[in-house]
Image 1 (tube, one colour):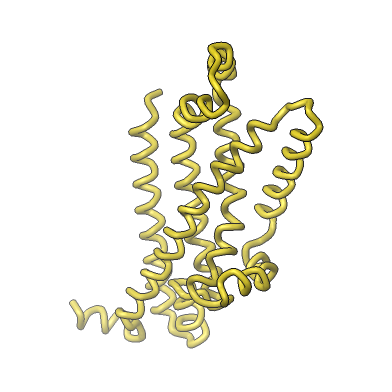
Image 2 (tube, helix red, strand yellow; image 1 turned 30 degrees about the vertical axis):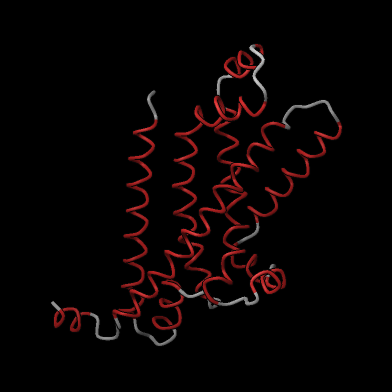
Length: 225
């Protein structure tokens, strides 16, 4: 098997491939944890401040919506460069796995927040109004109505966001973040070692398929409709 791999992929150093895969997974897992929490909080803020007459609440909604719209619209590769001073202050470096995390989180959290907000909007308003009529507090409605009712869409949105995030980690590799994108660009493309680029691409595709499979299974198991 080793001889066959060496024949087909002569330029691939497999320990480096494993290290790059680990770096991609680390960036993805750490980022998605923060994205999940921030995305849910942002979505709740957007949903709970919708269609309100109070000027202060309307202002909060407008500011939140503007933040989400702006940061989900900026191309990721530009965002990395744009927030480099902030990343330098926060992390102490703009390269490496840790240096990519702020850009990954800031770019994907607003996108995920919109997906979750849409899930909240699609919940039957009658259920929410009935809970309020029974004296349920806002926190109770969030815990017992919004999150349970929207859970299949929340998981589905998290799957989509995670897959997008893997693509972002590949782009982050181009500016020195490490991972499979870094290996594909610097080792594969710049050195004209097409087998390295091919292997990195295949591994990214495998990760995407695995995440999609797990996400679909989880969504189908939770969704009782």
